[in-house]
Figure 1 (cartoon, rainbow, N blue to C red):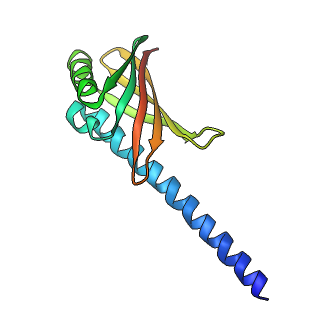
Figure 2 (figure 1 turned 90 degrees about the vertical axis):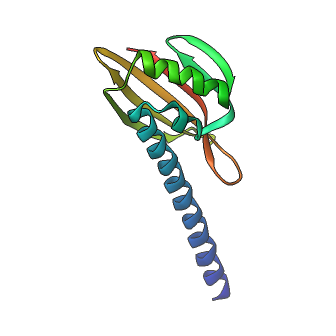
Length: 133
């Protein structure tokens, strides 16, 4: 009887942790979605890992969080958002969260790919790319 209770407790704890992880992932993706939708590089930088890989129209660079803010400020200025939606999110086989979105600016449409890095107390963007469709 004790074995069954212990197993039930273990299973419920693991399920709780998984639910927490999914909601945490959804939360950071939702927050990033809103900052991109608003075209706010300053707010977006709050969700960037200390070093982030940024790809804009095929130009791949690794930036510090501060440098990336300037890159996004210029991008949003040149391509102001008219719409941004998350179209898919999930985790890799290794468990790394990601999201794919669609960014619209005037007649231009970009596919946005975001890879999330889980740190000890939060989830931050480790990689983000804007590829023109």
